[in-house]
Image (tube, rainbow, N blue to C red):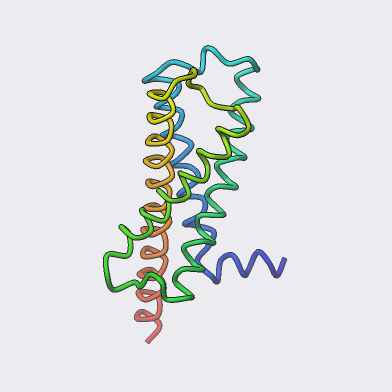
Length: 153
């Protein structure tokens, strides 16, 4: 139970869940509605949605922890375009996610350099949006805590 309180205290839970949900929705819109390549799955749709939801929860948590790590080390600071730097952190994570997907053979795209480039750019955009949501979630939490402290005085 103590670890759950730590998640709330350290401004981790809200940015984590916000980024995971946004990345999951963006992915579904891209793969399910825009490209319609979800219909080519080799597994049941419910299983794919469950596994991708879990994957986005893990990616969102790792992204949130990475941004907190960068903040703690003062490699990024809150005063200077913090949400954009969080977005760049997410885009960097997108490169790592792409490499994992490529190495494991889980890509939707067929073979070819054009598809590889589109996949890489898509992962950077998707995880970049996740990083942006982490940054905005942290800013929201800080603002909310500030307003609650002001009301208490």
